[in-house]
Length: 155
Image 1 (spheres, rainbow, N blue to C red):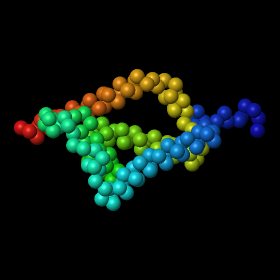
Image 2: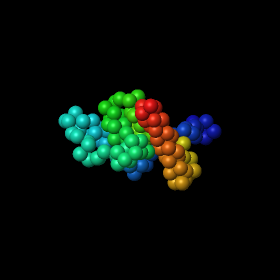
Image 3: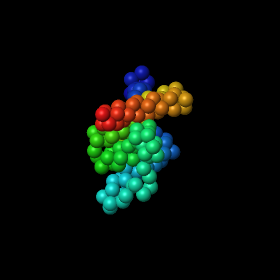
Image 4: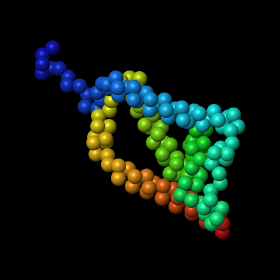
């Protein structure tokens, strides 16, 4: 094959390093273990109320705090009830969905050894302050929905 006929490789993926594959495998396994463990604990009848007490803000004011429903949301997501999770706490369900997407791409990297080029650009342009600001906006939006639902239920 002549040099000009050789393919330069894909512009979308490249081979992942051994270290990258191990890291991806740990990430994918961690997310699967998290949701799988929560699912198993629910099936066994574990009471998560023992770990997380009632919301102090809701007890004092009658209105939910920004993270009210987060535990219920994650547990619903672990059971596979994605729509219920989004209804209970939209911000928590979005974070769970992002974890699943990250685990999917990590699985592809770990098993097939492919690394997607858009991650290079994402990590190069990703700033911590923007991630924190984005998470706060998502949390505020989820809280707004939860507050609106609580106010509507009181009237």
